[in-house]
Amino acid sequence: MITIDSHVREIERVTAGADSGRDPAVVQSWLRCVNDYKLDPADAQDAYIVPEAKLREHQAQAEDIIRISRSGVASLFEQVSEQNYVVMLADARGVTVDYLGHPRLDSQLRQAGLYLGAEWSENRAGTSAMGACLVSGEPVTIHQDDHFDPTHIGLTCTAAPIFDTLGELVAVLDISQLRSPESKTSQQLALHLTRNTARRIELANLVARARREWVLRLSQSPDFIDIDPDAAVSLDARGRISGVTHGGLGALARATGLRFDTADTLIGQPISRFFDIGIDDLPQYMRGQSAGERVLNAGGEPALFASAISPAAPRRRGVRTPPPAEPSPALAALSHGDEAMASLQRRAARLAVRDIPILIQGETGTGKEWLARAIHDTGRAEGRFVAVNCAALPEQLIESELFGYVPNAFTGADRRGKTGLIAAADGGTLFLDEIGDMPLALQTRLLRVLSEGEVTPVGGLEPKPVRLRLISATHRALADHVAAGRFREDLYYRLNAATLRLPALRDRRDFDALVDRMLEGLAERYDARYRLAPSARRALPRHHWPGNLRELQNSLDVAAALADEGLIGPDELPETVRDSADRDTALARRLADHGGNVSALARSMGVDRSTIHRRLKRGAG
Ligand SMILES: Nc1ncnc2c1ncn2[C@@H]1O[C@H](COP(=O)(O)OP(=O)(O)OP(=O)(O)O)[C@@H](O)[C@H]1O
Image (cartoon, rainbow, N blue to C red; front, top):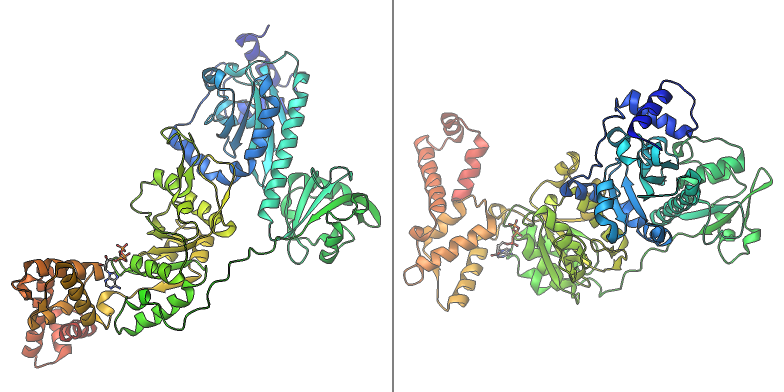
């Protein structure tokens, strides 16, 4: 009978160097607990579940591996749920980010830490399967009083590591039971199942990541080579290894007698260094050939069986109408004789008939959304134009708004699930305004939508294909965000394949025509006639217009409402606009006082000559 006392005494004996019948992995973990983390086995601690917000942060960061692991986690649970096991996936910091367990046992499981959000890092929770596996990188069973903390000595837990294609440990897969038979050997099947599922998850991950590359699946026997291989490597176009599953390291080492301790030493090596093949031989290893003949020879000796998957052909984009020579009416309406705008409109017309993502840059109110709509109308896509302001949505809502969610995906979610805005824009245009404000974790998901043309709703397993044009906009210098690590570089380069930069209103040469066009619009709307008094027309361009077209439109709206019989004088203009005009008139007067000498005036005001020139030019225009 184990008591807390006897457990603590055993740990003390073992860490003092006494022999024990414990597995070496257990002894090493106990030593780390006592010597490195200074944990005390007598100080029993309840299982720790991280707060909900923290969990969502961990889930967002581990999002890729959670998605890839989902079907493995689900099929493992199917195999073991009868025996009341739970299946947990922990991230590299030991926090359980995905979980399947019996709702019937919910409260007991939660209390025991066999639950979503439970943190099992070794330095917090002492020896556990997940914690020990994270440190050692080896599959392990921690059975009952193998656990360091007496709180957990009823549990049996088995974990296996999941490595990414570059050899980094990214997650741990665990199956655990609240109660189990006394003997540790009862868990051998658990160890086998967990290790196999981890291997399959790594294979699925490698195949998904290497879609555009050759993948060579490897096995010691030809029997299941096409459906359940031991390991895999991916190869770039020149036949160099670009990724490997953890099993691939061992398989290559065994087959060739060469040694590699880590994936680093393998990545970048030509496959011809290991086997008598080159990239051109790979088609012979594809599924059509007999499995028994697909042998890889190392130094003339048969070493391994192989099954090759060829790179996926680039997705074929639908053919649309050829680019029009002239901007569409929707685009043409955006300017009235400004050269910079005309050139932007010509570029936009060409881009409108392609699916290339477009990034629109421009100060606030320069008409980024109007331009995006005009591009959408020009492209003649059948789907909708869906605009999302990333800065206006609360961070915790952006994900579910954009990606949608499956029924009951999280606490507070609609029971019927929800279609996300990305899916709503299928066949049309998704306009992401203020993209610079999108949280980093969502940038990763957005990147996947762009590169794979698929969207997976929150809590969903199945990605759905989407085809849309993405137009994003920002008033920020995105490149600075990239440099500061707030914006993903790869996403930035994807988004700005085509950048359209809208000029500020103060730099536009069609200012007068714009004003006239806006007055005509107001006249139509209110069935009235509006005219600008010459003094008001002179005053308008003297203002700096930090709010650009929106500010101009709003100013004219107000002025028209205040105008007597449709005549807009300076008094009807907003105070800020009048003040700017007055300042510039005063400047002209002071210049006259300096005999027209700009340098003398600049000196007297303590500013640059260019400042005076700029202000005068604006006043004259
Ligand atoms: N080409 C245009 N001609 C006339 N008015 C325009 C034009 N483009 C935009 N406007 C006016 O400016 C307003 C703001 O435009 P829009 O919302 O497209 O700007 P934005 O750059 O997306 O703004 P923000 O940076 O605040 O998101 C519009 O409501 C419209 O009144």
